[in-house]
Length: 177
Ligand SMILES: [Zn+2]
Ligand SMILES: [Zn+2]
Ligand SMILES: [Zn+2]
Ligand SMILES: [Zn+2]
Image 1: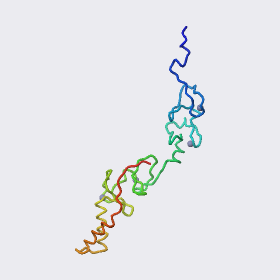
Image 2: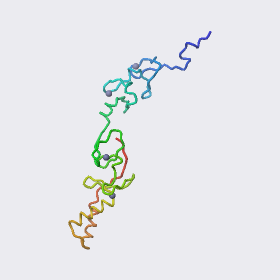
Image 3: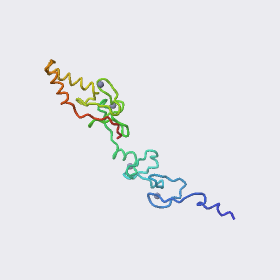
Image 4: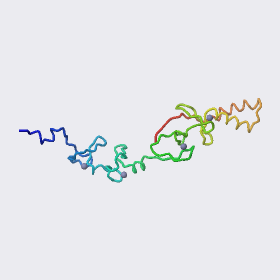
C-alpha cells in the first residue's frame, strides 16, 4: 500500500549526469562545479589529470577549464617583484602597477615623502622611483639649478623646460594579477 517509501524520486532526488563521463551520478554526494555535477573520480584537473577532490578549496576555474592550483599558477598566476621593496608578490595579491613596475599595495607611496596615493592621484616615475607631484617638480627644479645657476634669466628657461620634460602622467589604478 505504501508505495512512496522506496521511491527515490519522490524524495526529491534528481538524477544528475556527470559532467565528466556523462553517466548518472548515484552517489549520495554530488560535486557541483561550473554548474555541472561530477563524480568524485571524474573531477580532474584539465591539465595534469590529477583528482581535484583532494584539492578541496584550491580548485580553480578559468574560461571553462578546471585546474588544480599548481596548473592554475603555471598558466595564469604571475608572481613578480615589488619595485619598491624588492620582495616577491604572491599571485592573486592586489598590486599597483606603474608602467612595467609592480608594487605591493602598501609599498606604493612617494619614495621621497611617503605620501600614500589615492585612486586618481598623479604620480611620476623618476629614475624608477615613485614620486608625488610636488617632489617630482622639486627634483626637476633642483636638477636644472645644478646645471644653470639661478638667475632671472635662467628661471624662465627652467619653467619652459619643466613643461617640456613633463613625462606622461599616469593615473593610479588598482589592478589584480
Ligand atoms: Zn563521471
Ligand atoms: Zn593539474
Ligand atoms: Zn613591496
Ligand atoms: Zn612626495
